[in-house]
Image (cartoon, rainbow, N blue to C red; front, side, top):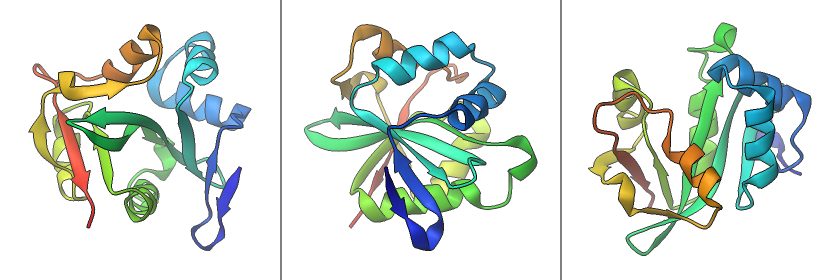
Length: 156
């Protein structure tokens, strides 16, 4: 586990009950589904605040020859939303990684991520993961848009 002490953000592959609980409360997934992802996604880690109020997973991927991080399962506990926690996690990631991709789950998140530097509408078929097929399915589902697309952050 690595700790970024100035902003109380940690990166971890040591998934604990707080991460599992936040995931389940945020997305309604079964414990078994969460554990399947955590045990089988080999090229990812969790970025979260030290109190486990907000988190996201970064998964290695490739888009048009670019080595990227893909944001998955980004969430903030309901009573802490609109407090800037997710923006802090996103800024942390943008400071560390040049290319970050995500698929917005719904219409309101398109605007949210656009305001945070994620742009464009990339075909989701351009995202290549080095993960087993079931994990790839996890990574591309959960979007309620009629025509899902990826957005990309390009750092300097």
